[in-house]
Length: 171
Ligand code: CO
Image: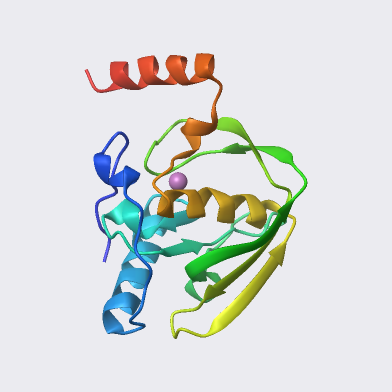
């Protein structure tokens, strides 16, 4: 089911999401709704809080770069529950966007390589080791679980410019 996306500066985006302890139907329904909502907005990643659920769950589905008409299949969706960074190193800059701040794209600095421990929808321990765009996407989404959005990483000047433009949009 497609759900409403929580839009910046909604206060819920500042919540620290809670650890998932039950890997039940309710969690699976939430993950399914997150997928439907993300695909509906042509997104590549979504954290649970972006549809109003303050639990440590996120999904990522990066379409392959070499295909013209890409399909983001459900079975290719990475479902990451209770993620913990085991290591982070290097640094790189990539353009990021966010379904909670639609239409805004900014270059953001992140670690280049990450190793993440997490659980899948059945509570099974998994490990992700990545140094490509997926590493960036995971860091962006984990920030959501910690009440942070990507524009908080902008310089003071750029942040002010963004806030001004954003306010104008809602007049
Ligand atoms: Co986001």
